Length: 102
Image 1: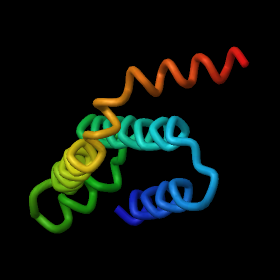
Image 2: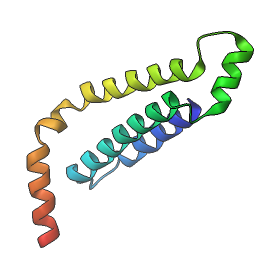
Image 3: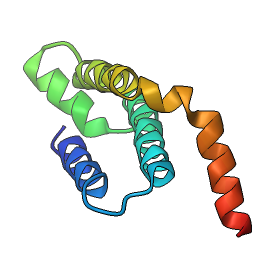
């Protein structure tokens, strides 16, 4: 979870500052949401064996399940907070296409 917090902090810094182009911000947010899906899948697929070792030692709910739930919750929060971005996705795509042609 510390690593994810670091990634959140990095995203926060990327989205700040002057002269930001909304399409770049949109791409950064979507990339982060994609990373959350990947991390959740990796946790569920037991990609991080250290989590299982910890859960066996503690006799609690497997750590990967707990963390996968947290990642899903974070992704849902992103969907809620950035729902306006999704409604403008077609316009962003058109803008990106035009800016590449120029």
